[in-house]
Image 1 (cartoon, helix red, strand yellow):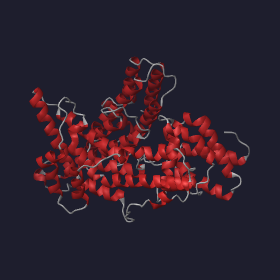
Image 2 (cartoon, one colour):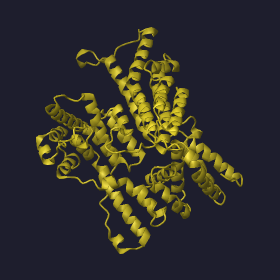
Image 3 (tube, helix red, strand yellow):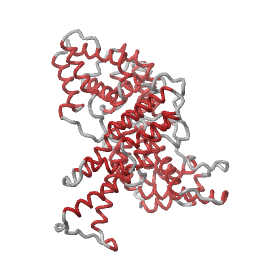
Image 4 (tube, helix red, strand yellow):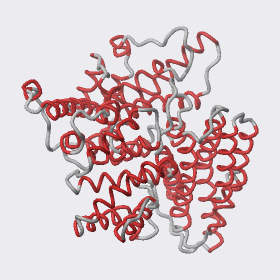
Amino acid sequence: VCSKGIEYGIIETLMSLIVQCTAQGSGIPSSSPLQQHLYLSRVLLELTKLKPSLVPPAIVLAISGLFQDFLPSLTPTARENLGLWLAFHLTNTEYQWPKAYWDHWAPYAAVEPNSRGAFIATALRGMAALSSEGAVTVVNACLPPASPLVQSVFLDAVKNTEKMCIEEAEKDLVDRMWNSSEDTDFIRQHIISDELSESHGAAVLMDDSNMHHPSVWWRCRMAARAVLYPYVRDSKRTAALVKKAVKQHTNGNDAEANNMSDEDIDETEDLLTDVTDAIARFKSVMLAALAKDAETYQERVESENGAAKDDDQLLLAGEVSLMEVVSDILISVDSVDALPLIESFLKHEIVSGFGLTTWVLGEYADVKVAVPSNWWKFVSLAVQNCVTSTLKKLEKEKTDLGGGIGMIIDDSGVDDEDAKEAAVRRLDEVTKATVPILTYVVERACNIIASIPSETKKIPTVGANLIEGIKQLVRAAIFHLNSSLLESSSSLLTAQDLLNGLASMDANGEKLASICQSASASCEGEQGKKTLQSLSTSLEKIL
């Protein structure tokens, strides 16, 4: 970025600190309060207010240079930090930004996933998340009239939800869950009843024995859509309001646009709280639907082939199918809401950590899907949940006697050797639960990278997302293990014990790096080989 005065140097320094901040939503605290994203954003905002004639032009020039010359080389986390900063800054400066920049940036957001388009989408969605009226405020107060960014950033994200037609059987289920006080057990019985099957008219395609086909899991998918219905309704309402705002913004006092009536809005509605509570309440409904779908499929396969599918693989396919529905609905939801909702599915054991990981890396998707840049945050949640749930089970085993009678055992007389053995056992059980997720992530990432076409000259977006994501995930996993095992063990375990535990499960840097090296040997493209070698080196350094 070209510097012309001390204000430009200050802006460049603050920008460099902002892009290096710990990723938001990672669950990892900042190394220092002075390196927090919000703190640095506030400093830059106060500078803008203090020197309104000097700082804003310097910011515009800095962002222009970053966007044009450096953005493609930034890691996904750095790019996200920059986008979230811009969202915060513009929200607090009355959206003052040159119109020409939005016009120049618009084409990048309309093409295949790319670093510049991701930055623009992060900034605009971040502004929407910070406004009480969401995307409508961004359309009215920030973007130029008729900007194509409205379509590419806001409306394209909800097109699947807009097209989601709710049939009568599903409408009835939504009504039972949200508009009546019907007992949860009655709803559970309804979801697995033959009556629902007949009214739904569901049938697995007779020429399709694929356990990952959506029609196999129609009950659990219906149950998930019903539980998340408030977000479906809100998404459709927001899309309608955005379209109305576009008409008004473009045509001024257009009579047709002004006569469009808003849907009734409950000002006291808290979608996150309501749906999180619903996930806990209707857990039994979703699990019963999942089990019934699996049972029906097994019966069909056995009658046709005489051999049943592996139960664990079948359950995994059901969890992935359920998460596909969840992602279709939450795709336009800010990560501030999305991550806690996904965490609720994990916490209530509706989906497993491995099922969540398999879904987010798209191995069994019915269509080719792009791996999102923040995929590792979901897997980090899965690892964290595995750690906490495993420790809770161990603690329950410690206090439970036969017959399920809970009793607190006085261990004041237990010597240090027994305490050390207990700490080592906790480490062993936790690594057994989490290592399969880490190993799968590396294997899946290597397979995706190895499939990069041989003619590719640059690292594609998906490759960069995977490499950076694995680095962030490994650091997050180590943090979760340290905070849960080392800090709670009164120094009975050390960091080296943790690394030795990972090594005993073939999950140290050397073992994980060998997965990358094996994939590199079978990779035809030179760029793919270089990418895998870079990942291999990074894993050896981190672990």
